[in-house]
Length: 214
Image (cartoon, helix red, strand yellow):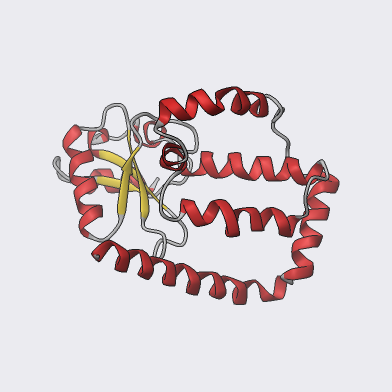
């Protein structure tokens, strides 16, 4: 494979980085000569406007590889985060999939339309999460995490118990969601909608950069 070919050309102190999106680094690097120099750097899509990069070392990756990779990404304007242990599909996708799974369930159970579910994120949660994560949001919504736990732990646990088993994205629900989205965004207009998305992501990134300078 391509990694083995690169491995055969590398010096002993080189860093071999892969942008693999779901394969854990130990599976990719286990047979490499320089497996101690291997690391996964998983970018966010679209990378020009979403600078986060997940940095995932294998159990045998040298510590200096993690440090240097983190520094190089930061120097190029990316925002690296270190995944401390290997986990299937890393962190960003796991959070994203948990959101998609619950949205699917809410639609399937007739709680809300596709358009309104998307508005819950774009006009509500997403507004906050563009500037701070869910844990800091919780921290600020109370007087710290101890207070947040005291206030909401029973409610959170009760609601989480209703989430149920994961569901496969197929069948009549898939048909209905596809039809609702296609009625708003026909398939032949996907590229136009992607441009619409990217313009707004670029504007948001500029706003965040400007705010960080103040």
